Image (cartoon, rainbow, N blue to C red):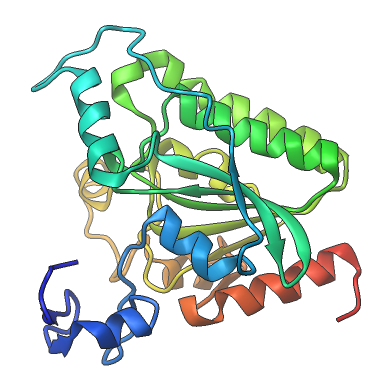
Length: 264
């Protein structure tokens, strides 16, 4: 967000005091527009205070294809690291939510569009496997533009890798809650983001595989209003619920206790 006292809402256009939006978990108090959050911001409002620990940071990205487009891939990684203070587009966290031990993967769109390369896929797979080994519920917050083109087929194979790991987690009867944030698209949607025991989304989040413009050009038809938005997907049975950010923590607590058969 802009470094000033006032900000114009991207949705309703109203000029608002920036601190009011921050105090409201980066949600516009006038129209309920949900701004994107960083991974660190998300874990700070979801986990119990001082209960969380970031794990799997030893897995670092490389440049297996020596890829270069308008700039070298290594340079893109370095710039994103400096911009976000993260080492990759996802962080794995272990901690508690209302005293319930959980494993959580949180994607950050600020890091190369939250794209999924081999390291992102490996970290998410390790979170899944750790959840299975330790019998702790898994929560993944997705926010991604899809698979990372700079790693080619190595990126593509993360779809199968993460999906297979979730299949094993399901066999172990360990709960998995998927939270889809704006945007969740491409290979992330086509793999782990839509495979939760419960799939929920933030209001008006863009969720889909290909973008609306690509689909319109392919089918030669105009798409319905709000196509690929969270509320549209909920209406058509592709989501279990749309949950405002201020209610998300309490929603997760209730869902976890239900899935774990734990009384309040």
